Length: 403
Image: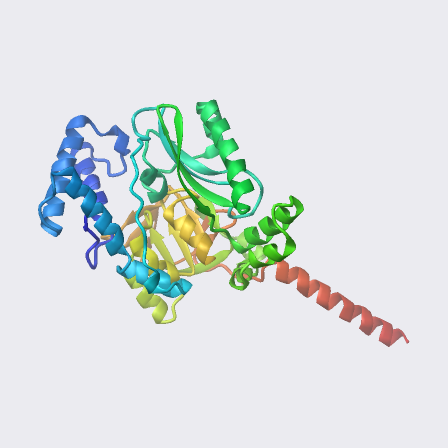
């Protein structure tokens, strides 16, 4: 925002650090919800934000047109920042394509309990099931949903809070799939009971979900078989074959925390709380788990290097979950029992404290977190294939010996 980025060695996003410091000073609670701040608190935050901008980039512009011009320039400038370059390199996106900026009127989801924001999918991006899937927060802006600062509610609960809005979103969901003929990921804002659509795009999905969605859309006559085959990239099939935890190992394992299953599969590794240190460890051939309070785009290098991602905050539409699904990474989000101390480089759950470099294991299918290294086993699909291959061999050898 306004050119203010994390400096090397900083673990927190700078503006979030300012907010957390004020909460500690005034209420002794770093995790206090933003909506609990008073008018005087917000005025003090504005003063501190301006001071941060002045320190990092120069005087904060008071002219709204200058602010708009700066925001547009920041979007264009982001095309060549480090995380964008890393992302393009991973997904083979040419740098000469460039980016675009949409300028549109603002709507507000934080005007009270009749307003809110959410991110939704026309189908479950983890399993492919044809259900309305997503999350929302009342009295919140969209950034609150995806940043992981607050853990949102499942979108189905909106039906009880605002039945008319939920009914309209269901209609939007069906219209989008009929038009785009693919699973959509869309963002919406409700301002004083009125639904506004912000954007839609083809949704990122796991390999398992890609196969199921492609097959079911053929049955629904939305697409043909030729199109269905192109909807499942070869590298996504690797996700379907990802290992799981060995059942015998799980019997004696202690669950220390649980969160939202955001990226299926099993992952073990040494925990690191910083993307740079995670990359360094992975380069030294260590198996790494990236553990964060919540992830941000600046963590992309660490997320690529890690075997799995674990966050203390955020939901299934948070940054960590979205990136994990796209990359096929094991991910558990919103494990609220975890207390992460970046300065001490520790993770605490009750009386248990884990230091950076200790082993943890996470199950992205159940959402469970375990201490130590758990033994893994081949995916269920590989196990079935092995059984089918081995059984005929045993049958042939029996017939041969009897003859």
